[in-house]
Image (cartoon, rainbow over all chains, first blue to last red; front, side, top):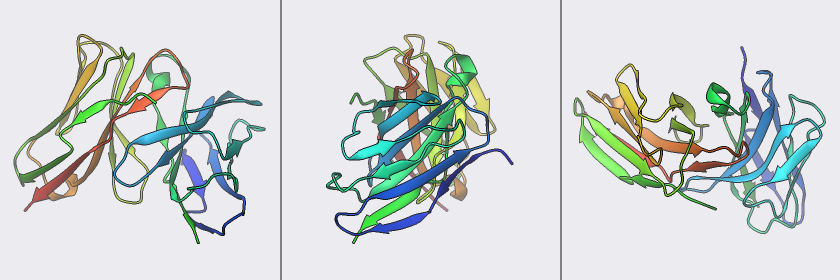
Length: 115
Length: 111
């Protein structure tokens, strides 16, 4: 089945550690995104990538890093510089940029908790 | 970042009643999307709208893309208990990287 797979579903991070969240899609979508969701709030864009080997900062990129070495993969690293990383993280993708290509599809999310 | 105004923030309705929610923005969008999110899960796409004035149905769900391109509404008819969840709108413009999301409407359906 085609879709977006995020892993792990639950992750615990100690203070000062970097952690990486995986996102893989087999939809052959060009663009991929990472969002952060805090309880009771909407989604905020962290980073996005429209093509392989290229990515741009979103609204809250500080303390995060990404890479896009392959079309199907867009891992997110939450660095120790992110002071409040506890949140629900959502990976998403879109086919393209026009018409139905503008539709966003989401993964199932990853919970990150700082302990 | 820019936010959409989504209302109401929460709704409590009886099973069988209809539910309506809407989103408004100061910006024009080319696409409006409506999602449902269950706790701890990713949002699932319900309806996508690509053209001003478009009215689209998906089962008991109906959504419209406002003529001004600055608003959209979602209606759920004859609600059932499994409709419970958080409903989000999202607007997308010409910048492929940018989507704007509403803060969600939490729907509770009482049996």
